[in-house]
Image (cartoon, rainbow over the protein chains, first blue to last red):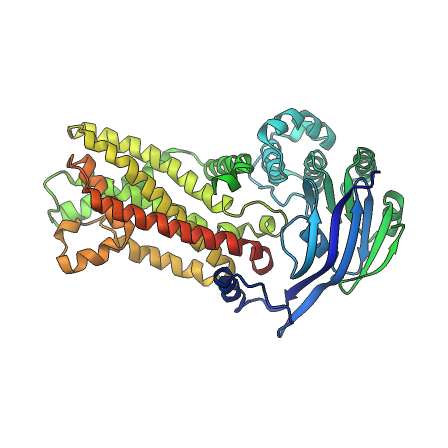
Length: 239
Length: 257
């Protein structure tokens, strides 16, 4: 583990709306395009803080667990790290390539074969086509799906589907890996293979963030655990 | 835009390839669909206007007249139709992983452009069959193609972004496209239109594009320089404005989709 900071959240706030239709949002965005002003920082009707005043600092090579009840802000933190969304207030700085395994197989298409989906999902995770060609034997071997790789994934069982998605994800050459509730993939032998793979990534100085409800798993693989409650960090162990 | 997309060029390629695969998977005749749609529309119009209504538009064959109009229209409506739901339909990608969002609507423009090129090959065959003389004016097709792609891209980006906020866009775009079809000289010639309405119709860049595609190929005439300069400028400015807005509001897509 080095002392280089790769993820830093400073006083980060994130506002979400409960309403389904955001009548004001488009108008606000357009006004901000023209005037260059930032969003409103106060809460309007039906809005709430998904994160309030969060400070996080993760060093290169660390494995951090995030735990907390549903809606406590775990996934929001991962979304902010992967640049899918942006903070309402505060500063986030990320160093390195992020592989967001937020939901396995988000880029899978049921009509495409396993192999075609490897290209699809791999490029979504930031691999180039050339890199992918080189890694495909490795990815296929890890997923244990050799016989089924030319079958459309709509014919896969849900376990096979997740195994393929996980294999693509952990073979991307990222610096930061985000896992959201994905450690319960496949049967027991595949699960222990996944945990081993995470340990390898850690040993190679990859930074990992894991979201899980399973405290046992978290304490086994993580250097530290952040416990979230109502969008704020309640406690941090081992950090 | 080119700089932004360069890092993601492989993703764009894979998206185009994916759309191509999905489109023709489990189909019996595959890529022939790309030709079938414009050809059957052309045959329909030829039948209706030639045999049923017996109108005359120009002094050259109906087949050429309608096919030349149908081809760019099919591309434009195909690309924009794809774009409208391209972002909202891929919400599981948009809310999970970052990449320049324009990649998805752009892949729709690209895939429809591939179809268009196949259709264009058939067009050249038809020109040969009807013994239309080849002239240097054919090269005017190139700037017209650039205009067409740029305009289709702009409208696609705009509709895709708006549909993220309001699903009304999807419902509105279906009949707006029908309106636009009649505002574009696909089934008539702009020469037959009264001068009062001509200017209004030329506000639609497609009018200029379709009309001049016929002019430079079938009629073998050149384009008036100031006209294409003005239309081109208009299309470029429209594109720049829309792209600027798109990149500014795309960061909020994941929150509102």
